[in-house]
Image (cartoon, rainbow, N blue to C red; front, side):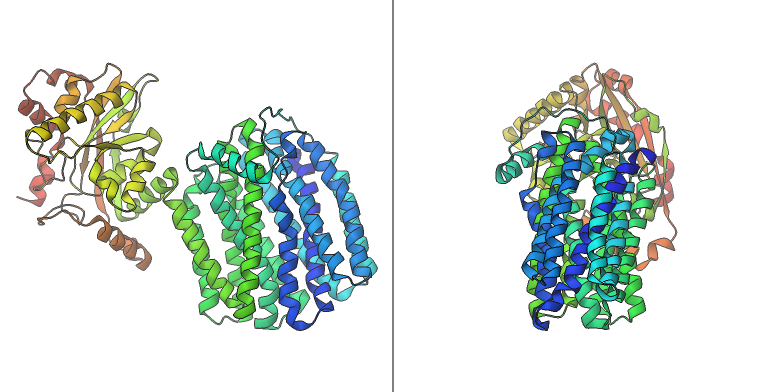
Length: 624
């Protein structure tokens, strides 16, 4: 914590000055115009602070980050002079220009301050550094916003001017105490904003899913900027609050975000907090919707605002940390500059949207619009980040079932080994469960090419790098060619070192027994099995007789219908009171047996596999 302190203090003083100046303009300068133009001035001021980020700097890529920070803090002094002139002459153009110049100064400062986190704390200090940075930042928002609202009502102009300069000077002094072990950045990246966006997008896209982390984090900044500006208008129009009371609400929001950031920064070191982000985002969306739907009292409204703020802290930190963790040292500054540029495009769009909505509709409609945006953004992220989707899937399965695992260590491999995983197939849920559990093993399923035509399913299969296989239902000579092609695919995947998974039976069991019959897929794989491939058979007991199986049914259950029903159980709370069905997963290393069985006939080979899969006790309990 101590090594980050000079950076935290430098940042918090800058954030305080940003927000105090913006709040003063919103409350003081907005009083210089006719009442009907107040909404426009407030939103324009918020937009002015973020518009300069559209011209995001990449200076930290060419110069030391500490040097860029100090230059940025030096520029803050003349900017405060412009602000004072604006207030002195009651010139709204100068006042808003000062806000825009502070935005430009922050655009210079922002990539450097985030880039310094890894330089100061190392890779192990990223989560703590990000949590502290954001907590202190929102402390700055809290103090700056509250000071601005109080100063606008209860102090002389000279006190306001003095505070702006004092914060700027203290920030400059603290910047000289920042110590960091900076790495030299050797790659060239264009300083042209349009070209920079295009080039960096391509760089980010090489890290699977990382661009979706960045975009969802941008939606967080959309929401944060939108609500902060919105509260100034909503508290006045809906609850007739004074500037000081509105400042208190804004301060409470900042406290909530800071608290969420601190707690999440601590938890993120021990838990996979990124996995909870989509659910937190959906929770924020519903709270925002409640403000639109219900006519809350002042007290209830303030409680809801604080709840939204705390969740926002939990929403933000895991994504900040993920960018830092996944970017290479030589890429980090570039990615942070790219994120800052894109995020402030989002913030600017949020300001523009607020202006548009509030010009025609009550302020509560902004809460409705933002709730829809946050909900959709969270769902899109869920289905575009593999580890998060798997985490979400397995956690929800555990809500419904009591899962126990035997011989899990059989899934471990030596450094030069790859896996061939052969599970039994008694329910449509078991592949979802397996891939949710073992996403880190990078298992590639062999899947019928027809599934790529199913909406969403094809997209998810691409996320898992599933291998398209030909349609084995084809008969005659074409069918033989399809099988030969499939054998070639399996051999290529195994020899390339991929971990692959397929079901030897090729279908969900019809009667509770795993029946492979005359199928040749596993048998042919045994014939071509590379020396460094480990074969693991998986028995999954407990699903037969559940709604996910074909128990007493002639057709395969609809997975869409069952997923909807499962979600309904969770939202209704029924899943927390009903008795959980016990599911057991058993893993067996059958590598040596698999190699030995290849000398048998295909039918005998399949019978040996069936002996491993079938559990007479489970079958007899349910059927006989």
